[in-house]
Image (cartoon, rainbow, N blue to C red; front, side, top):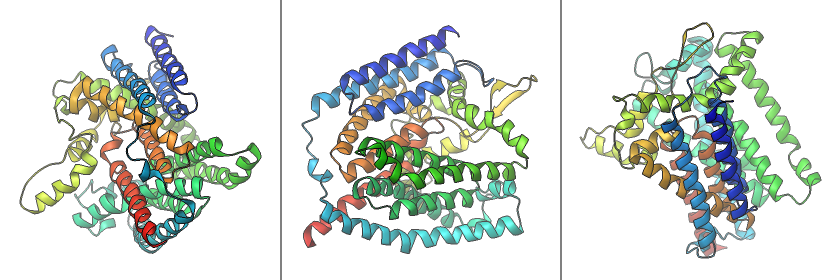
Length: 441
């Protein structure tokens, strides 16, 4: 074990200790996120993946962020009784049932039929024109610049990725919240189906990974809100079956997509479990050492909030402007291969599309912005954890979104994708419907 590995262990253990001292009860979910990053940051420092070990300057960025997270937790503790927006988090249970029904009907009547249409079209194309691997490239227009899935139309493609997909992700936040607070599983199961369908539509493993994360987050929330272990196991017996099914489907899907047998799948476990979870550390280090990388551009918030800013940019471009969103720039740049390791046979390990949330944060303001984001994230994790224990539907929905950001920020600049629009959609739906039914119920 090297010096850097020991350093990482000491730092994260201190962070977990401080969170425990700040508030054992409300820092549980923050500790889960810290432990998640601790695990993969430590593995990335050991070279068991054959990826290049990151330098100290890059490692310091993670120390800066999680130091900010601890400071954010301290600020929450100092201000915990001074919320000016408490009324937004109060939804009585008698009113909640009307909100759940309205949201469920909207998804069943609008989002599900649209998703099923693209699912049917995708399955048709895979069965008649493309192999699974070819179809994956076709979906994102890597061959011709457009996709048959979306009728070779840029606007239909934008409609799916910028409108339908954020509503699909928002269904997860709302569905988990309704299940945990309102004991209503209907939208939760719809959300699972939507993510599953999206995984098939895009022929990607990422949505399947998201499904497993949804199940684990749901189990975690239920564990801390259940009155007894017997109730917990009884409530989640079908969830364990779903996890087993998704893992089996993921194995079969991987073998089909990569055109490999069972032995190939076993060989791929190292790639999908270890390398995919650690390569963003090496890519970040690679780009920080590359003077021509776009990571050295200063974007002052445009990268971090690119997932929301792309909408007004689209409207402005329709009016004759020619503006490229930072989300598009980052996505296009990270799609190329990066040499970030050496295989056992001496060949280079070249991988793409796996930057991390630190890529966007560094572009927006270097170490200072990373520290600010850590403060903001730490504060919100404990703030929404407090709302979770006070049984707030909006609080649980936002807590789930924070957990998603923490989990998937390790894979890609997740914040500049669908997550922010989804977070806004779920929050606006709950707030607007709460005020609406407050007037008529």
